View (tube, rainbow, N blue to C red):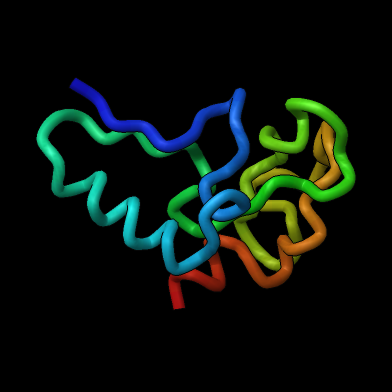
Length: 94
């Protein structure tokens, strides 16, 4: 049994449900029986890229820090979401 709210083919949870609802749904998902599957970025509230067309708007790079780089200094293969300065792992840790 599995519970999954989004994947690489659907809109990110925070884009569909909002920030507060996302927290509630992920908490509920963690308490249900079975294995929770969390698409990367849902745990920090990443949203769909507003300017990238099609399925690529769901597949933006993980937003690790306010520099938008994370583990690499190379340019990402797809543009970062413009909100990477405020929604990223580094900010959520604090």
